[in-house]
Image 1 (cartoon, helix red, strand yellow):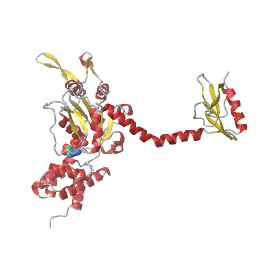
Image 2 (spheres, protein in one colour):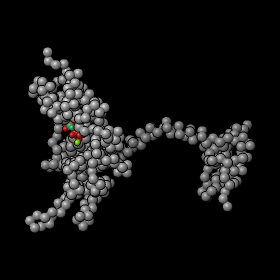
Image 3 (tube, helix red, strand yellow):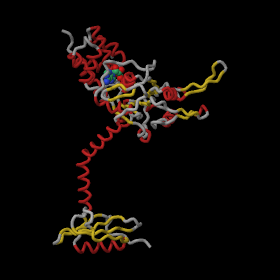
Image 4 (cartoon, helix red, strand yellow):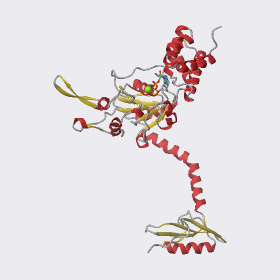
Length: 407
Ligand SMILES: Nc1ncnc2c1ncn2[C@@H]1O[C@H](COP(=O)(O)OP(=O)(O)O)[C@@H](O)[C@H]1O
Ligand SMILES: [Mg+2]
């Protein structure tokens, strides 16, 4: 027989009434047995242990009768208030409790596992050092590591799969390369927009001098040798490449080379996997600017730490200009140039401009104008020749807005 329905949708909670001697209460909770309820009764302070004088288990029908009786006797349910008090306490106490927990976690995780070569400080993070190798990128001494990059670098140290999303030229690839350059790790890149086939990526059989040879693709090469692999523009990758990648997205994930009789490739401890994309996740609001990009599904994205990288701020970018083009670039010149770049990017985001304005383009233009002494002439090969006539006209207008022509 089915238990009769309770009049209340949710009978659980605290029922209270005020008497001469204090607050009298009944608490209804779920009992261990199915379809039964635990009833506790007491006077005053339901949270104090030992204040319970009745403790029994009833079925649903019995509870319904009790609820009727309590209502007659003037008990009112306090579930909302109790729950919201508890919620309010949690809301207020959360951050301080979290900070204590995070401090404990930092103490226990403080020691970085290195590969036996010590560590290098990048920003404020200690990164395990690799070894010199032709694939280690060159250090760019003018490269700026703002404090907001620390979380990304920490994710690299912890062997997370890191995806950087942001506009073209925001600095996604160079960030990874500069961490690798400073910590002596080789970098391999595979661009998914066009050139890279599944064979390039995973590997292929070939015939050489009458012999059949297996050639590792970039993924098994990086995994075996402990290089860092950047999968650029991952939102253009073909499904067979994404399938191969999915297998190694776990920190110690192995690659199975089906083409080689299911050979298993285990990752070298120094191996790291990165991806970059323009229009994924939080950047998908800009999809119209990046034609042909695929939406990545959430399950795939959840296997990555996805960091959004914006262009450097004008103050940071002037800093980079001054440092890169020392000793001739002045602060005043740099500030104006950074402001022009910022205006061009705003025009790109509004779709007034169809070409992005990277820090690389700005640096190149600045370098050329230090040679020519003429911003307009320098803009020819550094900017105008690379964009459509409409874009060139608009950029020329932005530049004129910031720089009065020579008298
Ligand atoms: N933090 C930075 N400090 C110095 N230069 C930077 C920084 N970020 C980006 N740049 C410059 O911008 C250029 C373009 O960055 P890149 O990594 O190629 O962008 P993306 O991969 O996002 O398209 C780099 O070559 C570098 O010169
Ligand atoms: Mg790039």
